[in-house]
Image (tube, rainbow, N blue to C red):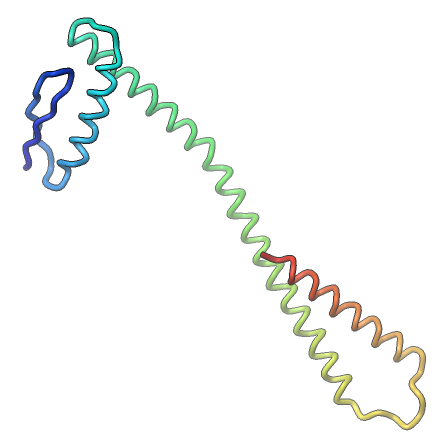
Length: 140
C-alpha cells in the first residue's frame, strides 16, 4: 500500500492507494484542486462539494458521449467488413476473368477467320476485366 500527499485548496491530505497508482492519484488530486480553485471563495466543504459535482457532471457527460459513439463504431465495423467482402469477391471475379483470358490465349487458332460471335465474346471478356480492375482500384 502506498501513501500519497494531495494538496487540495491549500490543504494537505494523506491518502492510501495501491502500489503503482500514485501518479494516477496525484493527477486526480491536481484535477480536483484545479476545480476547487476555480470556484468562488466559500467554505472548504462547499468548494469540495461543488468541485465534486462538476467532475461528476463531466464524467456523466463523457459516458453519454461514449454510449452514443458505440453504435456508430459498430456500423463502421460492419461497413468495413462489407467492403472487405466485396473486395474479396471482386478479386475472385478478376482471377476467374484472367483465367478465362489465359485459356483463350492458349487456345490454338483455327485456320478459318474468326466468327463475329467470338470477337463479341472477347470484347465482352475484355470489358468485364476492365470493369473488375476499376472496382479493385476503388477499394481502399
